[in-house]
Image 1: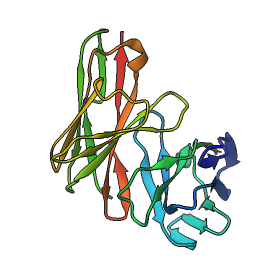
Image 2: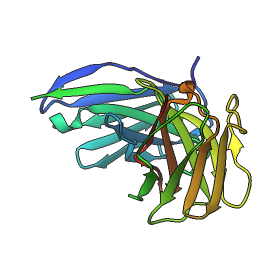
Image 3: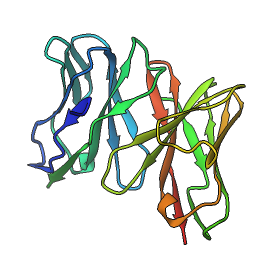
Image 4: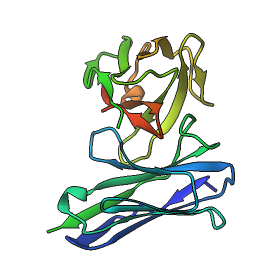
Length: 113
Length: 113
Protein backbone atom coordinates (compact mmCIF):
# COMPACT_ATOMS: atom_id res chain seq x y z
CA UNK A 1 0.00 0.00 0.00
CA UNK A 2 1.30 3.44 -0.92
CA UNK A 3 1.73 5.95 1.86
CA UNK A 4 -0.34 8.51 -0.05
CA UNK A 5 -3.24 7.57 -2.29
CA UNK A 6 -4.78 9.99 -4.76
CA UNK A 7 -7.42 9.25 -7.37
CA UNK A 8 -5.69 9.83 -10.73
CA UNK A 9 -8.93 10.72 -12.48
CA UNK A 10 -9.12 12.04 -15.09
CA UNK A 11 -11.72 14.49 -13.86
CA UNK A 12 -13.69 16.57 -16.35
CA UNK A 13 -16.02 19.36 -15.23
CA UNK A 14 -17.81 22.30 -16.83
CA UNK A 15 -16.62 25.84 -16.24
CA UNK A 16 -17.97 27.26 -12.99
CA UNK A 17 -18.24 23.89 -11.24
CA UNK A 18 -16.92 23.14 -7.78
CA UNK A 19 -14.08 20.64 -7.92
CA UNK A 20 -13.15 18.30 -5.09
CA UNK A 21 -9.74 16.65 -5.07
CA UNK A 22 -8.84 14.14 -2.39
CA UNK A 23 -5.95 12.23 -0.87
CA UNK A 24 -5.73 9.66 1.86
CA UNK A 25 -2.62 8.69 3.75
CA UNK A 26 -1.56 5.89 6.02
CA UNK A 27 1.44 7.38 7.85
CA UNK A 28 0.28 9.25 10.94
CA UNK A 29 3.70 10.96 11.07
CA UNK A 30 2.60 13.21 8.22
CA UNK A 31 1.81 16.54 9.84
CA UNK A 32 2.28 19.09 7.06
CA UNK A 33 0.22 19.09 3.90
CA UNK A 34 0.51 20.89 0.59
CA UNK A 35 -1.33 21.07 -2.70
CA UNK A 36 0.38 21.75 -5.99
CA UNK A 37 -0.80 22.45 -9.51
CA UNK A 38 1.36 21.26 -12.37
CA UNK A 39 0.91 22.21 -15.98
CA UNK A 40 2.37 19.97 -18.66
CA UNK A 41 6.17 20.17 -18.85
CA UNK A 42 6.36 22.69 -15.96
CA UNK A 43 7.42 22.52 -12.35
CA UNK A 44 4.72 22.18 -9.66
CA UNK A 45 3.23 25.43 -8.36
CA UNK A 46 2.38 25.61 -4.67
CA UNK A 47 -1.31 26.40 -4.13
CA UNK A 48 -1.93 25.81 -0.43
CA UNK A 49 -0.19 24.53 2.65
CA UNK A 50 -1.55 23.69 6.05
CA UNK A 51 -0.68 21.73 9.16
CA UNK A 52 -3.89 21.95 11.16
CA UNK A 53 -7.03 19.92 10.94
CA UNK A 54 -9.85 22.01 9.57
CA UNK A 55 -10.27 24.33 6.63
CA UNK A 56 -7.98 26.94 5.13
CA UNK A 57 -9.24 29.25 2.42
CA UNK A 58 -7.34 31.27 -0.17
CA UNK A 59 -9.37 32.86 -2.92
CA UNK A 60 -11.14 30.15 -4.89
CA UNK A 61 -9.21 27.40 -3.12
CA UNK A 62 -10.04 25.69 0.17
CA UNK A 63 -7.79 23.07 1.73
CA UNK A 64 -9.33 20.71 4.23
CA UNK A 65 -7.48 18.36 6.56
CA UNK A 66 -8.94 15.63 8.74
CA UNK A 67 -6.07 14.05 10.63
CA UNK A 68 -8.30 11.63 12.50
CA UNK A 69 -9.41 10.11 9.20
CA UNK A 70 -6.06 10.70 7.47
CA UNK A 71 -7.82 12.49 4.67
CA UNK A 72 -7.15 15.79 2.92
CA UNK A 73 -9.08 17.63 0.27
CA UNK A 74 -8.72 20.60 -2.03
CA UNK A 75 -11.84 22.40 -3.24
CA UNK A 76 -11.80 24.72 -6.22
CA UNK A 77 -14.76 27.05 -6.57
CA UNK A 78 -15.88 28.66 -9.82
CA UNK A 79 -13.46 26.51 -11.81
CA UNK A 80 -11.95 28.01 -14.94
CA UNK A 81 -10.45 26.44 -18.07
CA UNK A 82 -7.08 27.76 -16.88
CA UNK A 83 -7.41 25.44 -13.87
CA UNK A 84 -6.97 22.48 -16.23
CA UNK A 85 -3.81 20.79 -14.95
CA UNK A 86 -2.57 17.96 -12.78
CA UNK A 87 -3.10 18.48 -9.05
CA UNK A 88 -0.73 16.87 -6.60
CA UNK A 89 -1.09 16.46 -2.88
CA UNK A 90 2.15 16.30 -0.90
CA UNK A 91 2.96 15.59 2.73
CA UNK A 92 5.86 16.01 5.10
CA UNK A 93 6.54 14.26 8.37
CA UNK A 94 7.03 16.69 11.21
CA UNK A 95 5.49 20.09 11.62
CA UNK A 96 7.27 22.17 8.98
CA UNK A 97 7.77 22.31 5.24
CA UNK A 98 11.51 21.68 5.64
CA UNK A 99 11.48 17.98 4.89
CA UNK A 100 11.10 15.38 2.19
CA UNK A 101 7.81 15.53 0.36
CA UNK A 102 5.80 12.40 -0.34
CA UNK A 103 3.47 12.94 -3.28
CA UNK A 104 0.21 11.44 -4.35
CA UNK A 105 -0.07 10.15 -7.90
CA UNK A 106 -1.73 13.35 -9.12
CA UNK A 107 -5.26 14.01 -10.42
CA UNK A 108 -5.68 15.23 -13.99
CA UNK A 109 -8.37 17.92 -14.13
CA UNK A 110 -9.97 19.32 -17.27
CA UNK A 111 -12.35 22.27 -17.04
CA UNK A 112 -14.23 22.72 -20.30
CA UNK A 113 -15.88 26.00 -21.35
CA UNK B 1 5.88 32.69 -3.10
CA UNK B 2 9.61 32.08 -3.31
CA UNK B 3 11.28 31.71 -6.70
CA UNK B 4 13.52 28.89 -7.87
CA UNK B 5 15.22 28.82 -11.25
CA UNK B 6 16.80 25.97 -13.18
CA UNK B 7 19.24 25.94 -16.03
CA UNK B 8 19.12 24.64 -18.66
CA UNK B 9 15.41 24.13 -19.28
CA UNK B 10 16.10 21.49 -21.93
CA UNK B 11 19.23 19.60 -22.82
CA UNK B 12 19.98 16.92 -25.40
CA UNK B 13 23.18 14.94 -25.06
CA UNK B 14 24.84 11.87 -26.46
CA UNK B 15 25.02 8.63 -24.53
CA UNK B 16 28.11 8.49 -22.33
CA UNK B 17 28.44 12.21 -21.76
CA UNK B 18 27.81 14.14 -18.54
CA UNK B 19 25.25 16.86 -18.02
CA UNK B 20 25.10 19.47 -15.26
CA UNK B 21 21.82 21.01 -14.12
CA UNK B 22 21.79 24.13 -11.94
CA UNK B 23 19.14 24.99 -9.37
CA UNK B 24 19.11 28.48 -7.86
CA UNK B 25 16.96 30.02 -5.14
CA UNK B 26 16.52 33.60 -6.33
CA UNK B 27 14.94 35.29 -3.31
CA UNK B 28 15.71 33.04 -0.37
CA UNK B 29 18.57 31.09 1.10
CA UNK B 30 18.35 27.33 1.26
CA UNK B 31 20.54 25.13 3.41
CA UNK B 32 18.58 22.22 1.99
CA UNK B 33 17.28 21.62 -1.50
CA UNK B 34 15.67 18.56 -3.03
CA UNK B 35 16.05 16.89 -6.42
CA UNK B 36 13.22 14.99 -8.06
CA UNK B 37 12.78 13.03 -11.24
CA UNK B 38 9.49 12.73 -13.08
CA UNK B 39 8.68 10.33 -15.89
CA UNK B 40 5.78 11.02 -18.28
CA UNK B 41 2.36 10.69 -16.67
CA UNK B 42 3.90 9.84 -13.31
CA UNK B 43 4.30 11.70 -10.06
CA UNK B 44 7.53 13.15 -8.71
CA UNK B 45 10.06 10.79 -7.19
CA UNK B 46 12.58 12.18 -4.72
CA UNK B 47 16.14 11.38 -5.75
CA UNK B 48 18.22 13.12 -3.11
CA UNK B 49 18.44 15.83 -0.51
CA UNK B 50 21.13 18.43 -1.14
CA UNK B 51 22.77 19.90 1.96
CA UNK B 52 24.82 23.09 1.86
CA UNK B 53 28.36 22.39 2.97
CA UNK B 54 27.95 18.65 3.36
CA UNK B 55 27.24 15.50 1.41
CA UNK B 56 23.92 14.88 -0.24
CA UNK B 57 21.58 12.22 1.06
CA UNK B 58 20.33 9.83 -1.60
CA UNK B 59 17.10 7.88 -1.66
CA UNK B 60 17.21 4.13 -1.84
CA UNK B 61 17.94 2.90 -5.34
CA UNK B 62 19.51 6.15 -6.57
CA UNK B 63 23.14 5.75 -7.61
CA UNK B 64 25.16 8.46 -5.91
CA UNK B 65 28.11 8.01 -8.25
CA UNK B 66 25.87 8.56 -11.24
CA UNK B 67 23.91 11.52 -9.93
CA UNK B 68 26.43 13.86 -8.37
CA UNK B 69 25.03 16.64 -6.22
CA UNK B 70 26.93 19.69 -5.06
CA UNK B 71 25.41 22.37 -2.84
CA UNK B 72 28.11 25.00 -3.13
CA UNK B 73 26.28 27.95 -1.60
CA UNK B 74 23.03 28.89 0.08
CA UNK B 75 21.50 29.72 -3.30
CA UNK B 76 22.94 27.10 -5.65
CA UNK B 77 22.68 23.35 -5.92
CA UNK B 78 23.83 21.36 -8.95
CA UNK B 79 22.97 17.89 -10.21
CA UNK B 80 25.39 16.23 -12.61
CA UNK B 81 24.24 13.18 -14.49
CA UNK B 82 27.43 11.29 -15.29
CA UNK B 83 27.81 8.90 -18.21
CA UNK B 84 24.22 9.49 -19.20
CA UNK B 85 22.25 6.77 -20.96
CA UNK B 86 18.87 6.86 -22.71
CA UNK B 87 17.15 5.48 -19.61
CA UNK B 88 18.25 8.65 -17.76
CA UNK B 89 16.04 10.71 -20.05
CA UNK B 90 13.51 12.35 -17.78
CA UNK B 91 12.27 15.61 -16.29
CA UNK B 92 14.46 16.74 -13.39
CA UNK B 93 13.06 19.24 -10.90
CA UNK B 94 14.53 20.83 -7.79
CA UNK B 95 12.80 22.41 -4.82
CA UNK B 96 13.66 24.48 -1.81
CA UNK B 97 11.79 25.20 1.42
CA UNK B 98 10.98 28.77 2.33
CA UNK B 99 8.49 30.10 4.80
CA UNK B 100 5.52 27.79 4.90
CA UNK B 101 6.06 25.90 1.70
CA UNK B 102 8.39 24.17 -0.68
CA UNK B 103 8.91 25.85 -4.00
CA UNK B 104 9.85 24.13 -7.22
CA UNK B 105 11.93 25.16 -10.16
CA UNK B 106 10.53 25.01 -13.69
CA UNK B 107 12.31 21.72 -14.39
CA UNK B 108 14.95 20.50 -16.82
CA UNK B 109 14.09 18.10 -19.59
CA UNK B 110 16.97 15.77 -20.31
CA UNK B 111 17.04 13.73 -23.50
CA UNK B 112 19.89 11.27 -23.96
CA UNK B 113 20.38 9.98 -27.48
